[in-house]
Image (tube, rainbow, N blue to C red):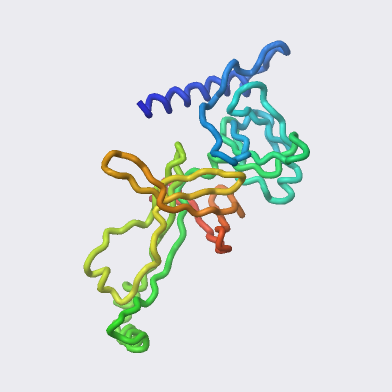
Length: 256
């Protein structure tokens, strides 16, 4: 039932694009007779969502709201200068726009949500595992006495990350099966954030960890909020609410 609903929405969006962004209209015609998406903003989210249309450039965003109607045109020159345009809008891309409070024709921030989708990764380094039965000094001495090849094997970095997918779903990258030998290793890796959902909220990215019970009900068990610092074809930089910045590289399909 959910799959059929998503398919219907996708078809409706495509039809609206063809009508509103792909062809010229008579002056007495509307771009579309209905909404292009049944999604609703989360409470308190003033972001405007829609699709990029033909005519977008470095100063102008031509934008079809998901509520339907005629395309809007936003001035994004100031946002571009302030590096608040994230991604490179293409026709049909799903967009998130933070509109200026005093001038509704000006966008303070633009996020290309299609550019955001993909596998974003970074490398993590292991650190010495703290053991109650051994001082840190002795553990460090034991590590120094290891064979060089074994030491290098123990200190191998791991790839962590997140895959941002359609339908506001996500998948953690870097999950490994916990083995007894891993638990007994003298080194340990930082915990992996197991994000399963994502959202844009007032221009920020919300990443959520969830759990699902036996009935299929999903519950959010924790969320992190991040500001966009950079979003390019191969680079994503986020600043989290605790002040930490995390840079990611995109893992392309041909690299897997």
